[in-house]
Length: 458
Ligand code: ARG
Image 1 (tube, rainbow, N blue to C red):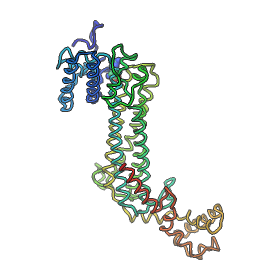
Image 2 (cartoon, rainbow, N blue to C red; image 1 turned 45 degrees about the vertical axis):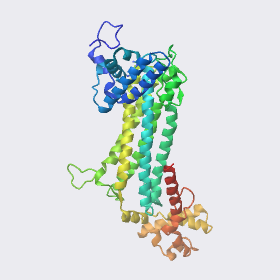
Image 3 (cartoon, rainbow, N blue to C red; image 1 turned 135 degrees about the vertical axis):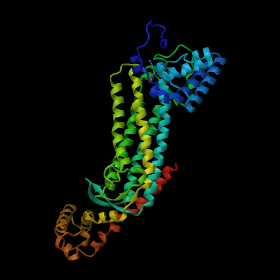
Image 4 (cartoon, rainbow, N blue to C red; image 1 turned 120 degrees about the vertical axis):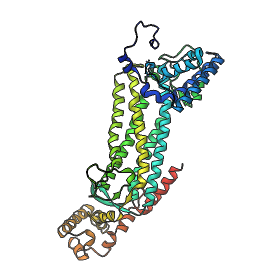
């Protein structure tokens, strides 16, 4: 095999250098975007008279055929041709002969790969947005289906105050709304076209960058060719946005794992997303949630890998940049897989309402409301807090809940207590009174569900 682009060399490439240098084993997936960009570039070369119209047409035809073969999966990628770009150029020359040798006029693999990656990333951002949308849909359906269920809300993993289950679920809806917003903002920064920067300094050929940008749906042209070929900020941001999604999924996973565990027993996971144990026949393990929690670690590592990859690089292109692909591909694939898993898993979850309801009765979660009741009777909050603390201690000693105390017992701690205390501690009252925007009253939660529906159909 003669050396690739080897005019200035006497010797062949060492097989170890080939093993180290090839990227087609992982960048072949960029072929659809590479071909799309090349076709736009070739059309522009012909339109500006840099190549003949005839050559332009031949290139376009050849690339269209290669695109079909890529889609059919019939191409055998050759690692001695280094990367997806070398492979496609060789295939093209094999198909159309000399005209194919003109495609690389006025460009470099440096602006080519930068363009391919932006086109690819833009499509991934759109796919992730759809996956997030589908998950939000699943959350909303799940929340609406269980709209009247009450569960303990926790702080420090201690029962804190009762909340509507739907309110708890909609907290995740908000997280994924922010994730979508972050990706949408990133999309604008991705959608800048580097093509035309050539190796680093631009090209003397009379190219028309605007035409190519228009054909590829880029919003703007990169303003500095040196920055354009070496910038990977958008991939770091992509991994950062993906990390936040994974962090959200991982927190939720943790809750699902806890809620599914026997001490909680709040939920039953569907068989579709649980697995058996090879030794313990009784087990039904929440593996989908555990694996998502585990995969979050690796997506965070992808983000870290890119930051470290870039931090020492002088301008402009350095071959190190080839190593950007595997982390960002992994981050993208993982986040899309986990989002799809969650959207499919959530509807399989069944709530054990009786366990949840019992848990709402335990843990003295009415304590804050009792203090607030005293405040309404004119007791300063700090004093009310102390009085209720004493009442709780009494309950613990007596093995009683706050709601089981008689009026006489309440009066031991606050002599002016009257019958209205029972209504104040009723779960219906407790929830209904949290009626400020963003709080857990049924009225507010219903409004939040309705608003979320409207947001989703925007
Ligand atoms: N496979 C290379 C990469 O991903 C393409 C760019 C190669 N450029 C170069 N000057 N060797 O970075």
